[in-house]
Image (tube, helix red, strand yellow):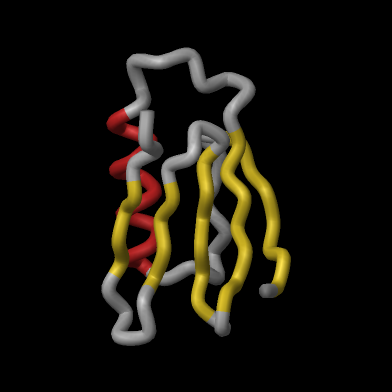
Amino acid sequence: MQLGTRWSVGDDVPERLDAAMREAIAGVEADVAHLDTNAWRWTLTWLESRPVAELDDGTTVRQAADGSVSVEEPTS
């Protein structure tokens, strides 16, 4: 695993992520827009050279080897 970077909800997503990842992250942020996310941050890591972005609430956006992107909601 390679550590990437961290950024706050609403800030610019790292440009090295492709459009599919950026769109999925934007979708998650739209879903939580009604919550107070001022202190929430994303953590980007790289697993087997593929990006994994995890939000402080546990939501995870990951890209598979075929380029598909999945969003995993946190379990209650």
